[in-house]
Image (cartoon, rainbow, N blue to C red):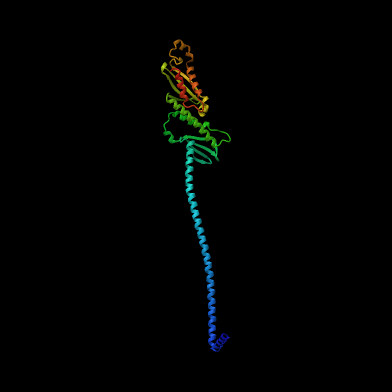
Length: 320
């Protein structure tokens, strides 16, 4: 009750005070309330803007991280691609060089109207084409300038092989560039093995090359001496086109002739008398030829190393 009386007394005192002052005070309070509300509105707006800016900042930071990650990934991929491409290119180039050296084939120009390549660093082959289809009649084969400076034991034979290479190019419908390349590779491989046989023959016997007329091939002439009987013979190994172009598969096509220059080389024993020699004179070449044939018959496409030299040595063994 006392507290209520006290409050009533304060209210009465306020009511009895200056009304004008109270009105001014209420007006001031109202203005301050309005300013407070305005400030609160500004604070709320600033808070909302701050929140938006924070959200925007977070978005920008996320975009920045994503951009940095994308850039790092792109740089890593670019680095890998750049290094891998260079490494892969080098590896493929090395493999290509190895394959080209292995097959003695190096393509130099590939165009719709021309296919050109080098073989064994010795020959240049230019194949005229029509939209990549080869024209067999228009194949040009020439020797590379660098190969002309190399030593050649059989220059006549080298020119002969080169001049006759185009005769072994396949013709007809369906012939592709690959057919031509493979045919010439087989031809040069056969010619190379024939040259190897002749070179081995020169180790013990002198060899001369004679080109036969009318495209019949060539023959290798060698001199075989028989010191025990003081005799001499010429042995001719005759290579027809099929024989030298398909060697050593064509070993059975090789022919040979024997020409006795002087001496009683039909007598297989130094003790044979003159009558025995006269009895065999008509067949002086047969024993030597038979010995050569026997040695050549022992050779085959898989095992024919030095067969010409062995054949001549077999003939000499008859009179040792």
